[in-house]
Picture (cartoon, rainbow, N blue to C red):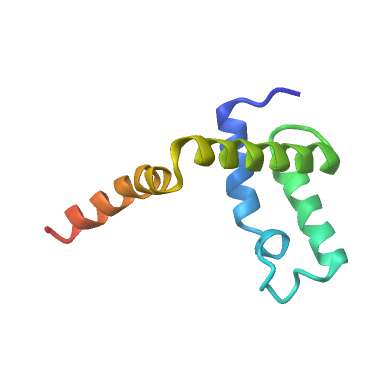
Length: 96
């Protein structure tokens, strides 16, 4: 199933809101029931109607694409591009 950029962004924003899924230091990360419940909530909130298995596949695919991009571009160049806009925005907000 092909997702649009908006759908991918929506998924990533929802995924980010459930640290028990992706953060191994989160107290609920090892509780499989809570992690499963978080995946179900993402499934229910997502505008794309699909099941948890497809959502997990999409997450893995996105992770692989990012890792591939980082390895081709060089890690430091990737970090610089990723954070330069944020740093510029912060710097302009404090008048540097």
